[in-house]
Amino acid sequence: MESPLRLLIPGPIDLDKRVLAALAEPVIPHYGDDWVALYRRLQDGVRPHAGTAGSVFLLAASGSGALDAGVRSLTAPGDRVLVPVSGYFSQRFYEIALANNLEAYKLDVKPGLAPTPEQIAEAIDSLSIKTLLLCHNETSCGAICDVEAIGRVCQSRGVNVFLDAISSLASVEIRADDWGLDYVAAASQKGLEGPPGLAPAIITPRGWDTYDRNPARSVGWYFDFGVWRGFERDLGEYHPQPATMPVNVARALDVAIGLQAGESRGDRYRRIAAGAAGLRSSLRELGFKILAPESVASPTVTCAFVPPDLEGRVGDLLAWMRNECGFILAEGFGPLQGRIIRIGHMSRLVFESYLPEFLSGIERYLRLARAA
Image (tube, rainbow, N blue to C red):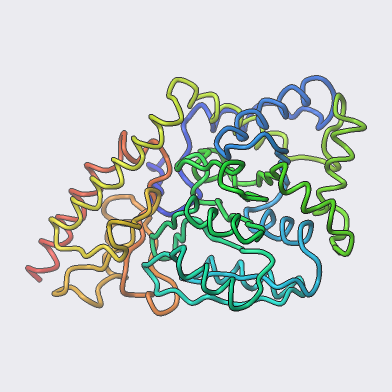
């Protein structure tokens, strides 16, 4: 069997062998004692990373499904919402708002930068905004925003905050209750280090107040958090969710979360941030320019321009790294396509095993390309 390609993309990530093994375990029912015990462990494993005493529902969906569910459940058609857009995935949040018939206003932010509390305060005040839809960590350009400071701005104005934490949860500190967040959306295949297929939808106590004051919502059934709350309340000891679940994905995620138990959350976040800073430093030494300023550089994905003398060679670099070194990297979106490489480092395997060989491969490519 050929050696597998290794993922250095912004999710999904490569999995620990023990996590992979759980995917091959026998299927269990999505109800009953064994399932309920597993489901509760997952809820208890996710909740502290969000910093809330609220509810955690595990949707059978991608992270985008969790974004859609939050907007559907916690807003009503015609609500005025603000969406800072600095890249591909914050633009998706804006499109989800439009698709749900919200009166959505876009705050344009230069790719590679993050929206500031001052920009958001000015927009809220001038537009009478009810809800902020905020992408925490924009993986298309490698920038992360200051949710704590932005949360203070929104709390002081009575504005709801929905956070896209798909690429930040379990890699970066989030204190949803303290920061005045209503809702946090995440995904299993990034910082939680599990396989794709589950989307944690996290509703804070404040978020439930928003839900209960929102009778005009029009959400269908599966993405209505009231339906999920009803199953928790009425069938919580037997069938705590409304539909069939990807049980083996859940088992694998349970193993992944269990493997994190030997490290405190604070130590984990500091380790991830330090590893990302080290990678950025190494890339700069090789002549790459990091897209995001250091003050807002993401701890989970790094976006970098190739050295100036190799401009226009991004596709060649990506192909060479795949074919010669066995690493899959990502390129940019939209106006950044063909100009940057994107390196995901959400998996523990990246810093424990991959980086020395990856950096050596980059150095070899640069040497060969310049000699050609």
